[in-house]
Structure formats: C-alpha cells, structure tokens
Length: 271
Image (tube, rainbow, N blue to C red; front, side, top):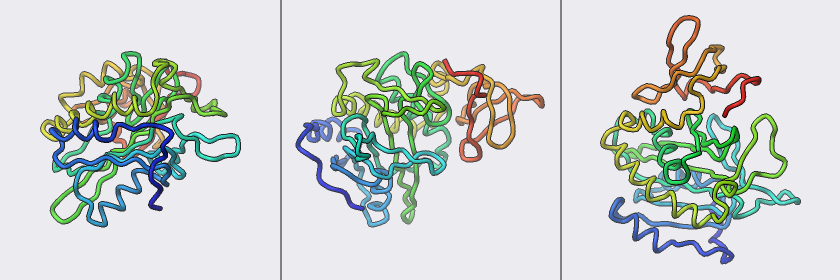
C-alpha cells in the first residue's frame, strides 16, 4: 500500500525540518502521507526497492500500524471506525546505521523523545513512553540489510489525546494532557531533531552513555514484574547494553527484549 499525499488540513513544516536535519543527516528528505498501512512497512518496502537515502515519513492516518512482537498500533478512529488524523503522531525515520551492536537502541530513542517533551514522562522497558501510569506512545525498530549496508527504521506512535474506548488493562494517555497547545506538526518539530542527534550519538557510542538517563525515567525500577517466559521478580534497572535486570529468587538475571515481554503484576500499577 503506497498511501496518499498528505491533506491540506494541517501545515507540516517539511522544508524547515529538512533544513534543520540536513547538517546531521546529509541528503535527508521528509514526506507526509494522508494514509498508509504502516510507516515502518512503507519504509521497509522502499529500502528493499533501493531507497537508501535517509527519509522521514509521517502518516496522518495509519490503517495497519504495528507494534512490538506483531501487536497492532492503529491511529485513532472516529465513531464510524475510520482512522482519525491528528489525534496522534505516527512517523518513521529510515537511515543507514552501520553500528554492529544495536542493543539498547529503542531505549536510547525513548530517552531522546522523553527528554524533548516533558520531565514527567517515564519509560517502560523496552519501547514505551508512560505518564501517570498510562501509555503515551511506543517505538518500533526494524532493520534491513542491503549488500554491505545496514538500514534501520525507527517508528514512533505518540498519542496527542487518549484513544476513545480506552482499554482498562492497557490504559492510554495523551500528550495534550501535559502540553495542551501541542498539535501533531509541533510535536514532530519538538522531537525529530533530538531524535536524530541521539541516533548520531548512538552510532558512535551505543547505549552505555545513555544508561543513566534511562534510569531516571525507568518506570519498572523496583516494581514486581512478570515475564512471558515464566520468570518473575523485581525490576533492577538495565545493563550497559539495554537488557532488563531482574531480581529473582535465583539472583540477578537479564531479560532481552527480543525474547520476552514484561508487564507489572496486575495488582501493582505503574506510577
């Protein structure tokens, strides 16, 4: 699904953002689409078709957005079930990233987004932004190899307002509850340059330099946790490669994000 050109209802600062990002990512372009199945899927298709220059792709609506481990992440819908533009920001950034070890990249991206937005925003390992015990958004990272080059696609979905019919098991929040004047273009402007700067730093130094910053926003620290692989224990932060540390009955163990999912025990809400 190739999507449609963006609508004229909202003014996106395409040229301004391209100029701001060019010194950091030479040759970067930005594109806004009215609707697409998934910005990550669209960029992965383009990379396979030979699109190798950095590209920032924004979708006003997503019809088949994806989260971690195959979960869906859809744009908000109206009462008729149609995707509703501008109640959230969904975008993906595709770029060549030649660092061999990408461990902790989703955490570094989360730190960059949270630092750009508000001190009250927490991070839930490995890829969610939280506030007031509710999810504000998520991050999805995918990679593609083309010959000797590795390309990374970093997708982000951020709620501006809480979705209607909020799931009580996985409650959501909206950034406009923290920043009332924020709209989708302003939100993108707030986060995209800090995000690119964080990626440049990550390529040079990995996750370790960001470990302390993540710890300050870690909403799982000290919380009883239940892992999908059957392990349980208490969150003890993350190590220098971004693996979750878990205090268990057998001692300190590490949990890797591509192996398991983690959630707090139902009777222990996040802060």
